Image (tube, rainbow, N blue to C red; front, side):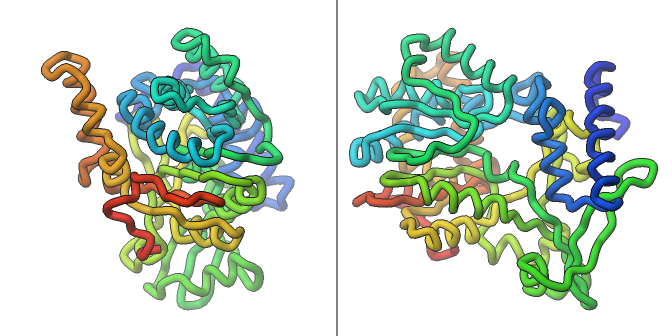
Length: 381
């Protein structure tokens, strides 16, 4: 920990305020808080949580870099997949958690080039700071597109078109389950001169039933995320025609709950360092857990959606013409070299190409996106 960047005094004071807020929630809960609730507060507490405050999150000055920040080719490749859906369904694009706004900008500009701009581009964003940054970016880079833009506080009542989520599901609050030979437990948070862990036995309910299915390896810790399946259900209720498209890191259930993955996937991202301590500087660090894509697919099917495809990000982008877009650039130029390096990271199996997956669920569409034409892994779900 001594090698980690030290926050500025005002940032540290912000974290202290959030710690006090969470401590009050623990006291109000009788001295114990589920980790899911802790994660929700750490990330989304109004004005204090990581995504609800004005701290820098993306890019070199932030805590991590997402694919859209690496190269515009990522958004352009997604736009080509989205264009085919919009040509069939019409309607809007709804982006969940748009980060800096870079993906929205790149998608909109490419759709404009292709002659398939959406009727509207709607962004559901919980962070007032990120909303302002997204609006400012669009205003500076493509002001003529702003009339198509709207920002939402809640999901729209109905959707025709495409719902897009890049690295959204991994940031939804997850419960921690701990399975032992003596039974299943939920791991929660207590206050003991600082945040600490405390397990509570489960005796009934959905978490109890899930804990009973964990591998019997003498102690198995994992995350489950009812919030992710609930989100898919809510989106399915609203999707009249079109597609839900999610890109994130994760596994199908057989890999997610493999006996060798007995310490779970929970990670913390702080100033481009990856940590395993979710109590590190609450409000200044991101907390994530990998996605169980089998649960996402099942939630979609249960809600009447078609599973259009599931594959690695590398396959999806290559099938979708990422290399063709790179080939349109002039070789040897600084822009080309930067884009080529980014493309390598996006598609190589040892980089983001394999750790990130893409899943599409739809209603009323005749064709699946070409991104799933080769390497489709629906059978693994």
